[in-house]
Length: 544
Image (cartoon, rainbow, N blue to C red; front, side, top):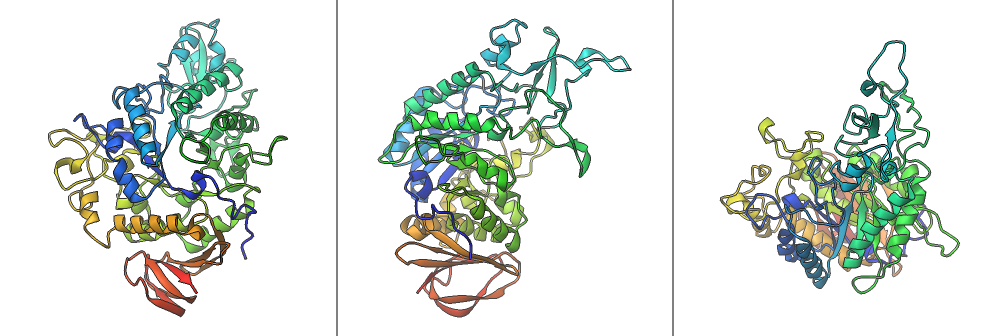
C-alpha cells in the first residue's frame, strides 16, 4: 500500500483542484496578420479554454525583448513587447479571463535579463557603476605557463546550459560576466539585496494588476557559489562537469521563501484562494521536494513554492514500472502539507505524441488528468499535435536550434493557415502537415477524437472529488499494465488501468462500471474479474 502524504484530502485552493493550461503566445492566435500570435489572440480564444474545461492559463513571456531567446531575455519586466500588443491589451485579457472564471499565471524570468536591459547597460558602463554589483562580474584567471590573452582566461570552468563557457569577456571594462544561457542573457546577482527588491517590485507590478501567480523560470539556478569554485568533473562523462556550484545552492530556498511572501501579501482575485508560485525545477525528486520549503514560526504552512514543477514523467521511459516508481517515490517524499503536480509537455520538450506515439498519448492524457495533484497541459496536446519538421532555412530558435518543432502554431480551423493567422499571412513557423483534419473544428465533429477525450476527462475530473482532490493508492505495475485507485472520503472509488505496451493485455479489476476509455468506446460496460486492455488504452472504472 502506498504511504499517502497527510494532505491527501486537504485540497482547498483553486490551484490544487484545477488544471493549468500553458499558452505559448507566439503560436496560439494571431489577430493582426503578422503571422505571430498576440495577447488579443488569447483573449479571442478564452471561450475555447472554458469549453475545454481548464481553470488557469500560464502565458509564456510577452515582455519587451530583443528575442534572442524568444522572450526569456527580458529588457523590461513591467511592459509588453509591441509584437504581442500593449499593456492595455493585457489588462483586457486579464479582465476577460477573470470574467469567465479563468485564472492568469505569468511566466517570470528571474535568473537573467537581456543584455539590452537598462540595468545591464548601466552595469557594464564602468567598473564603478552603481549597478556593477547587480550582475556577476569577475576578473580573468591568472595566466598560466603559456601566455594567453585575458579574454581567453575564463574565471572558472562553469558552462552555459546552451553549451560552451558561461563567461563572456567585456573588453571596455576588461572583466567577464556570467551567462548561464546565451551571452545575451547575463545572470543577475541574487546575493545583492537591491536586485532582490527590484525583482520583487516587478512581481508586485503584475500582482497589483490582478494576476493570479507566477511560473518562475529556472528557479533552481538563481544563486551561484560565492567563491566561484570550479564544478567537479562528471565521473560518468569526463568531458562534462557536475553543477555542484552553479545549481541548487542552499541560499536559493531563502529567495523562494521571499517570493512566496510577496505573493502571500495579496488576496484572491476570484472568489476564494490565493496567488500561486510555481517553480521550473529540473532536479531529482529528493531535491525537488525541498522547494516546497519549510514551515515558519508564524504558520504551519510550507513557505516555498506552492508547486515545484515535477517533470519526471517527461523524462521517464514510457514503461509501467518506471512510471509506478515515480508516483510511489514522489508521494513518499512529499513533505507534510505539500501538494503534488505533474507535467507531460512544455515549450522546451518534444511533443508528447511524438515522444510516445499517438495511441499512447491518449493513455498519457488519462494518466495526467487522474493522478493526485495539479496537472499542467501544453497547448495543442489536447489535439495530439506532434513535432513539426523544421527545414534549415525555417529555423527560428537561436538558442538550441531544436525547440521549434514543439512550438508550431495552434490548429483551429480547416481554412487557410488553420485559422491561426490571416489567410494571406505567413505563420512564423510551419503548420503541422495534417492541419486540415486535426484542427479544433474538425475534432469537435468527431466523437472519438483526442480533443473529445480531453474534454470528457476534464469534465470527469472537475465533477468528481476523488479525481481532483482524493487519495491515490495501490500504485502497481504488472508487466505493461499500470494501475492505481483514486478515492474520496465519502467512499467513492475509481480504478485506473493503463496498458503502456503495444499488445493487448489481461488484468484483474474489481466489480464496477466503465466510465471512460481512452478509445472512447465501451462506456457503461460492467467489469468484474479479468479485463482486457488494448495496447495504449486506459480505462477509468467506477468501483461498486
